[in-house]
Image 1 (cartoon, chains in turn blue, red):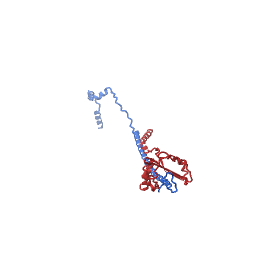
Image 2 (cartoon, helix red, strand yellow):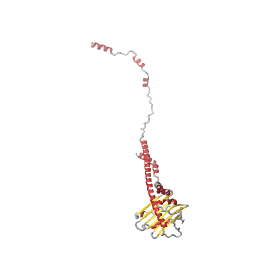
Image 3 (cartoon, one colour):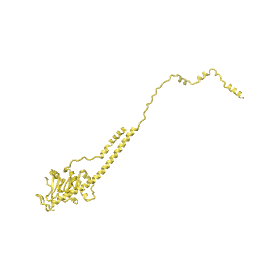
Image 4 (cartoon, chains in turn orange, green):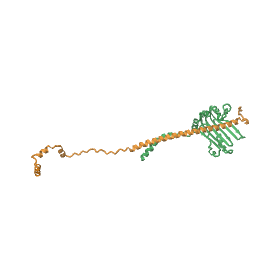
Length: 135
Length: 193
């Protein structure tokens, strides 16, 4: 049984000669273009090579801008501090000046009073040409 | 890093005007008309037992006037007087012994009052008490533009120099401060030298 099946398979799968003109028919049915591609001369196309761009570096401008902003803010802060300090100094100076003013007035009035007392002293002889003070 | 530092310094320089604007200071002003050149009495400060040194230029004077307490009637009164003033300079020294100060300095100030415009209003010489008091006014037109007092005693001397328009009538209103009623405009009308 096994031998018979084997023989049948061997007969069915035995090499068979291709019919006459099979190769030509087969080749004629194949598409022409791929064959032409292989047969024509190779064409070299020089495509433009894209320039290799450097990656843009934003670090420097960003740092410059940050420096500028920082410097302006620092300047404004300093100006504010100076202005505040100036106002406080002016306040202190004003109060000190006010005290000095009163002190100056005290000394001035004291000396004017001294002159007044001397002028009005009954023991003081009247200088020539000086009017008599009635008070 | 160097670029950053340069940029920072540059930016700081840009903001400099804002800083300098806050730092504006008035320049040292020229002497005012009627302002005396007072000698430097700094060396006397150590010898003196009491020193009053008041230097109020126009800026300080206006600041001082601004800070006077208007609720205090005396200070409010004085505020009226000081609006026309441009400077007050007082040097007052008291010593523990007689004539510890150089009389030549006092005389140099007195000589300045011999200049044009100044008129001697009061001249007190007391040989007994060795007291000299001179009151001068600087007359410009109809108005007093300055008042100077030089008072010297054996143990003290005082120089007062008030610069600016002085309303003598308003000065009379300061009696509460001890300013005597000198009846200036009535009797002791200044005689031009």
